[in-house]
Length: 214
Image 1 (cartoon, rainbow, N blue to C red):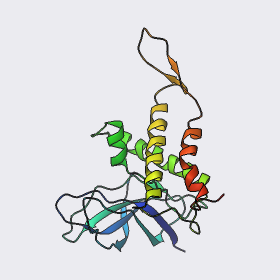
Image 2 (cartoon, rainbow, N blue to C red):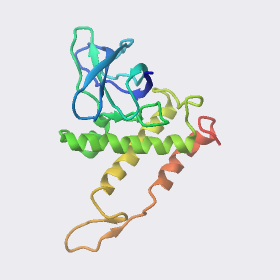
Image 3 (tube, rainbow, N blue to C red):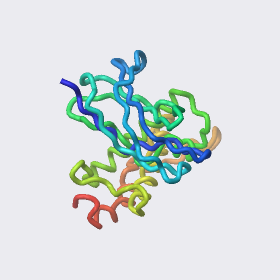
Image 4 (tube, helix red, strand yellow):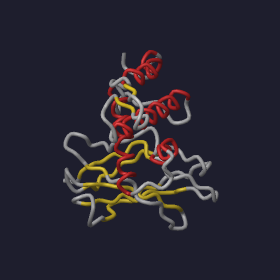
């Protein structure tokens, strides 16, 4: 029996040649690093503004099995391909690919890392997914109670919180929690270790206005 896998909130790369992305190839690998095989192609409605592409969600019914890895490649009408997205694993009980409200390109800008290594790009995607998961759990977003759509003011809040939390999660990978190094001859600054509380307050209006579950 084939696995049904849904990909939520994937944003195509911005284009500045007025050519929109028109489809997405879905690829599968048993181990996430070798043997990538295209299992499906999904047609997309072209973006009206390719410089500001919208988030896309799509589903394939052609996954092989639990534990396999998946990535997507956006395509255009002339056969040009974008770079593959960071691989994600189809874990038991999920059925939905991890998603984020911001992109790796957004986080690159915030972190001022325009040319990350492959490992850094993978880590950026990982912290974006982690931050988005915390947002969804707090606001109660599910398939039956979806997040606001891209382009709304509430979605902009989700994007900024996703980016801000991801930036802090990224910085915590390189230092002891709560300590901000300020120089070899200076007393270290101690920051609050519970970063979630600040971002929770930013999300509180969404929880109160009906987008989240009270």
